[in-house]
Amino acid sequence: PSASSSDATNKPSAPPRTSRLRGFYKLSIEERLAEVQRFAGLNEDEVAALRGVDSERLNQANRMIENVAGLFHLPVGFGANFQIDGRDVLVPMVIEEPSVVAACSNAARLLRSGDGIITDATAPEMIGQIQLCDVPDVEAARAAILANSDRLVGLANEGHPRLMARGGGARSIEARIIAESEIGPMLIVHIVVDVCDAMGANLVNSMAERLAEECETLTGGSAYLRILSNLADRCLIRAVGRVHVDQLARPGLGYSGRDVAIRIERASVFAEVDPYRAATHNKGIMNGIDAFLLATGQDWRAVEAGAHAYAAQNGHYSAMATGRVEGDELVGRIEVPMQVGIVGGVTKVHPVVKVLLKVVNASTATDIGRIAASVGLAQNMAAIMALATEGIQRGHMSLHARNIAAAVGAKGSEIDRVVAEMIRRSSISHDSAAEVLRDTQGARLPASGKVPPLSIEELRQVRDTHWPAIENLIADLLPRPDKASEGQLALSRVFWYQLGTGGKRLRAVIPLVVYKAFGGDPADAVPLAAAIEVLHNATLVHKDAADRLRQRRGHDTAWVRFGQDQAVTAGDAMLF
Ligand code: MEV
Image 1 (cartoon, rainbow, N blue to C red):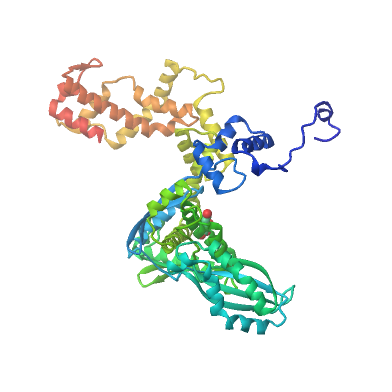
Image 2 (cartoon, rainbow, N blue to C red):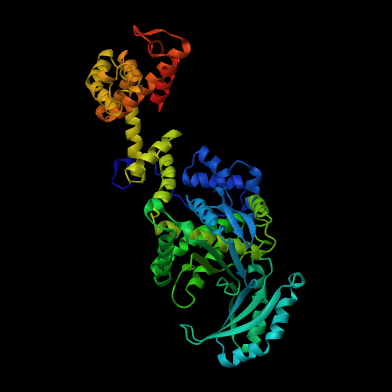
């Protein structure tokens, strides 16, 4: 508030909010929650939402990261239909964005019609980097490192007997000269490590730290950073999937299967040559990959970083996945670095991750990588197939629209009504949802909150105004019998006899007054009114025959007049 405002001078000023919370990490979870509550002015319900339902879960979370004061829930969905290297896989995905799970399940269904998705993997080798600065002679230093590479590999492996026993360990040493930089030349030593089933960060970091001193001795430089590289270009997964073009046909949109395949190829080439498009193309791929990685407790930020860096490796940021028409097939391909693990990290700690890993049933880290790449491939195929045909908004936004409808307060069946109306208006936004909700609620109840009763007079007036149009419409479809046909037992004779017995025509009037109440023109409801009146009379013809009722509205019933067989058959015809 401004200093001159009278409010500000009258009210005692609240203590300034500060995020400088001394010893926050030493507090219990409940104490931390209380601090967060104070800071943000949360009410008890909001604190309860943060706390989650299960206090043991909160304790488990407290062992995972620092300063825990809450749990955050995200949906777990399952990507269906995946067949990867001949094995059926149900793919758990944790994601907040609607349509991702549906889209990749759809593409996986198409892809399994061929051989499914086939993958190929390099050894799971990660790179650790040692940055050496102030090296007197970088060329000589590089030669010294390479000359001692076996010794350095041995030294790196010394501390990791279990990794060696599993067939992993440091494999080789490389040295790269960065000749020019703001801080002068640098020598970068790489240690390449087969990390087996671990993601490898801890292993590689500890090896890099272990070798740093020896590298300094060999080069005369000073070691600075000692850390793995997330550009994991020795730990690659390739996946390929094929779909017969006929499977892609969208006759409703006027596209043959080959048309769709060609459109997908064009979308792919666009992303391959234009970084602006590539970023979005790749974002779609990572929608699938990240959701699976999150579900299986992987360091998805590492994979993100590596995937984007790899997509720019030849100096031009490009598409991670491509699509090509080859003969009668659309062939999708993806190549991504995959730094993932099934040991370490939260894989054995997070209770939901443990269950989801059981669903995935991966026996090696590379299996996780193969699935991740496959989900990325399927996700991309689904996204560009939609983009290249009907556009993304219809499917994507109709799911998104449900969230928006709920967010503006629609409940139960109201959500469907609001979504349908937003789609009809081609306007999906919070404002639009709120407006539709107001309109539909307004239409249901007048401002007074009371529905005024309809008078008999009003009903009669509506009937008398519109009945001639209803009768004319029926007569267009089923002409009145003429004199010449008298004596013949034609359907129209039974029908028009039945209709001529009169009645209030209330069934026809109801749709007319409902239309009117919602602000419509009752004339537009004439076909519906006609249909309902015929349907109603069909039930009367059958009922009178079944009940042996001889008179209705002061006239013989139809079966009395025309016989049981004719009445039942005419009633059937009226139903049709
Ligand atoms: C939206 O989350 C992802 C897409 O934009 C991906 C793409 O454009 O390929 C649909």
